[in-house]
Image (tube, rainbow, N blue to C red; front, top):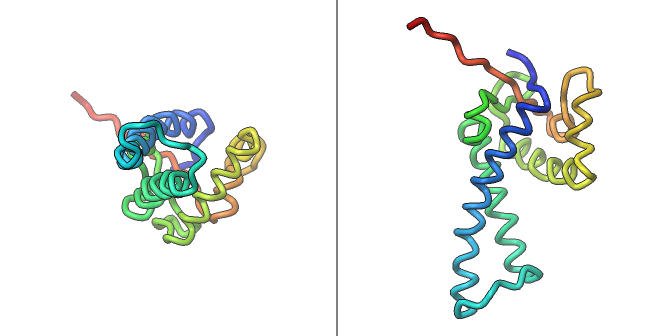
Length: 141
């Protein structure tokens, strides 16, 4: 068990980005229907809050329930707290917001992992969580 490296983390993020895009598309459909098929105003506060909450539910719901998203699962990653347990709702919520900040400053919060002695990104440190890599056991044929 070890904290994950940046490339494995990015691979899981790319995978989850595709899944979140699909979730956001589904949550956009009612807004298009309410406008009679017209494009959604992305500046609408209701739309922005809905998109934020959809992403929040995807990530935080996955982290609280299973300790991982589907992208994290595909890359052998597990989210843990300092006691190697599944993080609390509060820790996952803090992680979600802090990850947005980490990405929002040109990804510096993620790149911080390259110089951190424990390979932790800003949002890992702020939330008291970490991404751990569990390699798959090789089986004999």
